[in-house]
Image (cartoon, rainbow, N blue to C red; front, side, top):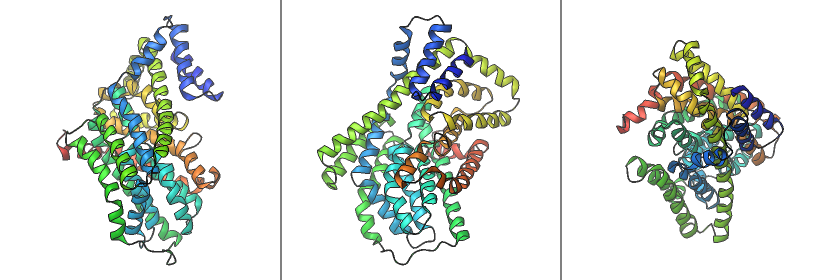
Length: 426
C-alpha cells in the first residue's frame, strides 16, 4: 500500500497537480482502494487533522509578518541594523542575516521574510557592488532562519504531528537558529576578505541614535511576543493574536504607514497563504490516517530499528532521507506526513523528541534553498529579478554552511538542550 500511495503522489506532482491535492488523492486511493474504507472517512479525517488549537497560530503569525512588511516595521529594522554595521567589511550582508533573525521572531515564515526583507536589502547590496547572485542567495539562505527562530510555523506543525510541546520547541529553536546565523556571518566575513570587497565611502551614513529611536517599537515587538510566551503570560497560539494586534496598532496608529485598505489587502493575502497551508495539513492528515490504519508506521519503525543499530547511523540515514525529501516536497507537508512516522522511532533510539524535531526542521528547511522546488530561491529570484542560474555559484557554499550546522545540531544535542536548561524548562 505504501509504495502505491507514494508512487501515486509523486505521479500527481509530476503532472503539476498542487501538492495538497496530490497528497489528498494518494490518501483517497489508499483509503478506498486498499483500505476499503467508506468515503465519509475523507472529510472526517481532513477535519480532525485541522481540529487542533495550536494550528490557530499559523494564520495569525502569517498576518503579523505581512503587516510588519507593509506597515514600516521591517524597513525600520533594516535601517537600524544597517546603521550599526554599515562601516564594517561585509556589514550590509551581515545586516541581512541579523534583520532576518529579528523579523523571523514574529513572522514564523521564511517566504514572508524573503519578500519583506529581500525587497529592501537585495537592491541595497547591489548598490554596494555585491553581485546580485550573491545578494539573492544570501537573502534566501538567511530567510531560512524564519523556521528556526521562534515562533515558527514548522515547529507548530511538528508539535501537533508528533505530540511534542510547542513551547519547548520554540525555546530549543534558538540554539540552531543562532548557530546558523553566526556561521553565515563568519562565511560573509571570509567571503568579503577573499574577494577584496570593501565598504563604499559614497553611500550616506544613517545616524545610529535616530535609527534606534525610529526602530524602538519595532524592536519591542519580538520582546513582547517571546517574553509573553516564555514568561507564561500567554500560549504560543495566543501570542500570534497579540502579534497581529501589536503590528496593526504600530503600523496604523503610530507609524501611520498603513491604511484600512492596505490592512484589508494584507488580510486577504494572509488568508490565501493560510488556506494553502491548512489544506496541505488536512490532506496530509488523511494520508497519515490511512498509513497508520494499515500499520505502515509501525512496520517502518521495526525495519529501521532492525537495520540501524545505533542512534548515530539512524540519524545519518534520516538526514540523508530528509534532505532528498526536502528538495522535492514542501516543508509543511513533509513534517505533517513524516513526523508521526519518524518521531516514535527516534524515541526508541533514546533521542529526545525536541532534539529530533529541531533536526527534522533544520534539515527540511534546506529544501527551501535547494532546487528544484526551493520556495525561498524562487522568492529571491522574483525580488532580484534574475534567473536561478545566476545564484547557483553563490548558493552552493551557503548550502554547505547550513549542512555543516545541521551536522552539529544532529550530533551535539547540547545546541538544542542548552536554551531549555537556560530557562529551566528541563
